[in-house]
Amino acid sequence: MNKKENNNGDNNGFFNKNPILIFAIFSIVIVLLFRSFGSSDGIGQNLTNNGATKTIAYSDFKEMIKQKRITQVYISDATIKASGSDGNLYVTKRVSDPTLVPTLESNNIVYSAYSDTNFLSDLLFSWVLPVFIFFGIWMFLASRMQRSMGSGILGIGSAKKLINSEKPKVTFNDVAGVEEAKEEVVEIVDYLKNPDKYLRLGAKIPKGILLVGPPGTGKTLLARAVAGEADVPFFSMSASSFIEMFVGVGASRVRDLFESAKKESPAIVFIDEIDAIGKSRNSGPMGGNDEREQTLNQLLSEMDGFDADKSPVIVIAATNRPEILDAALLRPGRFDRQVLVDKPDFKGRIEILKVHMKDVKISDNVDLEEIGRLTTGLAGADLQNIINEAALLAGRNSKKVVEQADLIEAVERSIAGLEKKSRRVNKKEKRIVTYHESGHALLAEVTKGAKKVSKVSVVPRGLAALGYTLNTPEENKFMMQKHELLAEVDVLLAGRAAEEVFIKEISTGASNDLERATDIIKAMVSMYGMSDVAGLMVLEKQRNNFLGGQTIKDYSDNMAQKVDEFVKNMLSERYNAVLDTLKTYSGAIEDMVVALYEEETIEGARVREIIRAYEERSGLESRLSDESDDEKKGVKEA
Ligand code: ADP
Ligand code: ZN
Image (cartoon, rainbow, N blue to C red; front, side, top):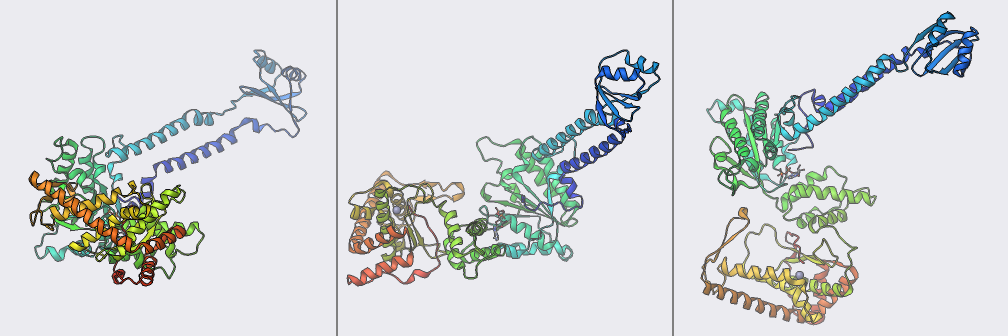
């Protein structure tokens, strides 16, 4: 569901959505109306007194009656007002006095009784207003309950209000970086716009399309863009909202959803998180879940039931877990088309950044490529968020435009958690971290096949990392060669090795590095057939990530022992080589440490400069490679 634009298409959408507001306006009008009645009716005001108003004691009042100095009397609950023959108005407190009326009559004084709170205002305050307040509260509760329950259990309105219908203004231009997915849905626009063109040929218009991809990659956006391009209404619902409280509500919501859509066809129905209802019926330890199953069945029968030829309604569903969907959903005539909406690549990220930069004032000299390189692995929603965060940062610093520094800061925040300069790192820790990170950085630069450094920092970030080295591997690498895997191991080991060489003692700060290095070598043996121990034999199968990346081990204990031995030996072999490299480059490490102490953060170029200077100074043959300007990405390392 998209909360931002759920404007109802119809004209009275405003009223539909604001019963409380309407109620408030209505009651204010009523109150004002009664007020004006009330004031014209207040008898007290009719007493014409050209003179003064005087408050007198009751006994004096009685005395004045007897002296015939009173012409008219008005009696209310609490007070008595009297017009004096002298033109003054006399006011006195009313006391319980049975002789008052006889006294007035015997003196032939005109008297009348009135209530301070006149009848209408009485009515208003004692009856009308409470009823209205009650009514208002009731409406409020009813609308809230409806939101969570679906059908109008309280009899006000119907579940249709829950169905968001809009005519999105979004176009394909707003969706960037997912070109393949876009191409696949383009034809749907044409079906919706010119159904006859296809029907004449006897073609069946597809009913369901399943968008598959991680969160935030623009599935909802894409579905809305289809509706926007075709200029048809877009009905959306999140499947998780189908099944909230009561059995049966979900099914009735599905029915309502399709009913509304058919009325306005051609239309798009979008169901987000379809896995919430579409889970395979035989999955899960508890077996089926009644409510979910009923809802799913309703959805299936709606999809089977509508005749796409007469009322083209195309159902687009989104999920990030296609593998758990019930096979019934994927059958022909239902969601038989799957479109992958994946995380954007380097070029895609730049495109997405451009789309969202249209909304903010941005400096002319920002380097989008750099931002693109730093954001590998992030989805469209993250990128949008980064642009927004950058704008907020620029605003906080009272800048007129968003600058590169703001963007980078925003990226770093989103990747590594908030910069926590305030976190206290003691001197000893800082020294260790500085050498540790310098070790990573050095090996990354001088090892062939390693990912180059884009930045080294000893500013603690987030909770866990005391420092980090951002690497910049080539983009779109789906395959790694053996030497590249080993280079990665070397870089990982270098943090700990640097501690050993320069601090002369090792700390606990390297455990994550060691774990990752071990995993890489293990995988080389057991999955990639890169060792003599197992040869080409695959020892561990990686089940697809959808099931949580379980591995299935299938080998003898004897083999297990050999593998362990191999991993251990390989690690120590690599470690020794890394120690040698670090010793050879000790001067470069010391220079890097000085720079890090001063600046806390240094760029990859600076690292290379330091190493080059050291190599020249000590007559080493340069091991720096030139291929450092490939597309880059940021990888966090502890
Ligand atoms: P999903 O439905 O896949 O979880 P959304 O469509 O809700 O993701 O994406 C959330 C927001 O992120 C979108 O409204 C859009 O602003 C931004 N976004 C995500 N992907 C893209 C993209 N490919 N191009 C442009 N903006 C995107
Ligand atoms: Zn490390």
